[in-house]
Image (cartoon, rainbow, N blue to C red; front, side, top):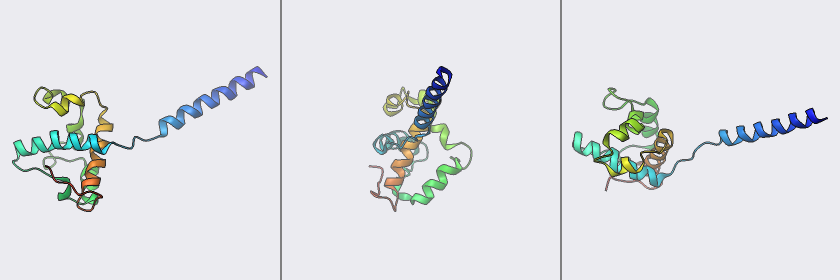
Length: 130
């Protein structure tokens, strides 16, 4: 009897843990906007002298770009620029990188995905880089 009860309790605990782990992070477009504008746009403006506003691409184009995970003509991965290592390397001169230094990489990337989707040419609120 006690063993059955213990097994049921254990099963409930495991099920509750699996349910919470399965819930995906939805992304915060406002945090994504800050990171995109202050990190991505700042770097593009400084390095290649051209900002890449979200409304320059459609949702499908942004999704394909992020899925391919190729940046700088395939020399880098997109995810590199969301890594804690990258943020640590620029945080002394970039307040947004410093502000989000401890945010998990996957959450920050999801935040930017939500922002560019919202701000895409065919998004809910097409956005430039201003």
